[in-house]
Length: 305
Figure 1: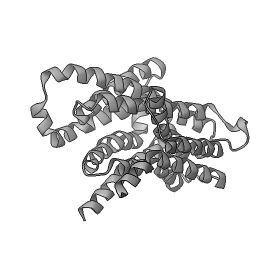
Figure 2 (figure 1 turned 180 degrees about the horizontal axis):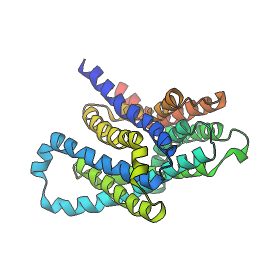
Figure 3 (figure 1 turned 90 degrees about the horizontal axis):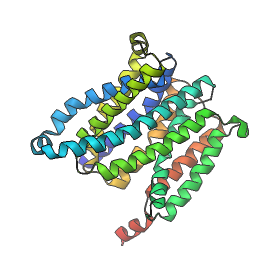
Figure 4 (figure 1 turned 180 degrees about the vertical axis):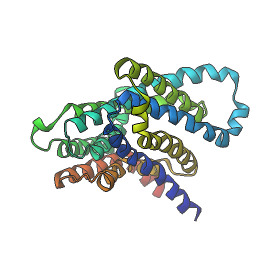
């Protein structure tokens, strides 16, 4: 019973994250700039983690050493700078998609972003770490799937929107690597608060330089911002923290990868986006590649033995 309950909890973050792509698309329709959107989103996201910190991090608060503060800020800001570029390229890529009338931009953004899971092992491979054959096959699947999903009418159907979303996936891969390397010695909630605050600050600076944000813009996008800021950061992060404690890492990774599927589901149910058969086949192939890259078949065989 407890195992079934934990499995259900594991699905809450990817559902919330998947539907956040819908919120981002809706926000674009209010004409809020990508920097202004991220500024408000990550301010809300940072504040939403305060009660999470107080509730779930009491023990860590007592044991937190003053000498840990400086490295927490340094590495948290580093992760935040990378996340800033990832978040901006994603939101701006979706914004361009809406302006260029790219079909099914919500689901498309979800699946292109999701291939960061394949970039992570490749970047590590370039850094000297070994990768397995499953990752290589998964990458081939992703390339074929992306072609079917994005190239709908020859190479001319590719736009700057696709390029920015692809860049976003690459940057998210670097972000994951930095998180894995530098966050292990800190409270994950404190680390996240530092990086989210960094994204909010950088987005605010850029918004006031390039976009001239206003209260009316932010209130017009109020509901999407509340969902993106509080939902996809505060609520989803909390359930991720709770559910991952007793979950198998490989299984958790597979469940979290369904975020891309829920982005397409959300686009279809709420925004009435309908992909072609070719697009759906591409999504299935990409998802299969992502799953394949996360499963270590040698390890599974050893465990069975």
